[in-house]
Length: 96
Image 1 (tube, rainbow, N blue to C red):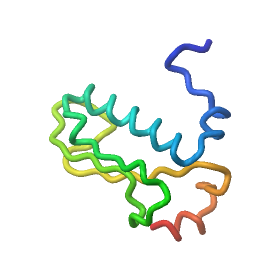
Image 2 (cartoon, one colour):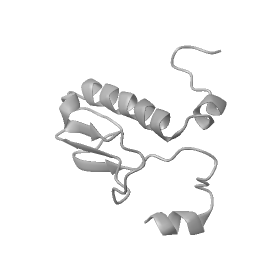
Image 3 (cartoon, rainbow, N blue to C red):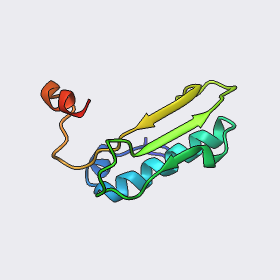
Image 4 (spheres, one colour):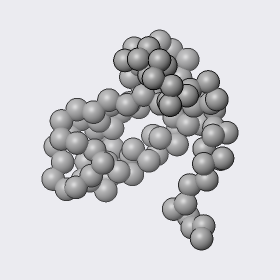
């Protein structure tokens, strides 16, 4: 059954870098708000073609509820498109 909370993997796979980053930003802000953090604590850059050392988003905060976010600082890297194959260990080693 599809709901507004369902994710279509095929649709996610069609997102370009900017669209994927915007989608992740919206989800990150929603989780920050749900967890009692200000969205200002969830910082994400929409500059997808700038060398940034692999960090696309950062969340700073002290959580008081259960969340996918953790206490302290978290960093995220957003990948989109067919070129990223996370099931290939050699590719993941190059990213670390």
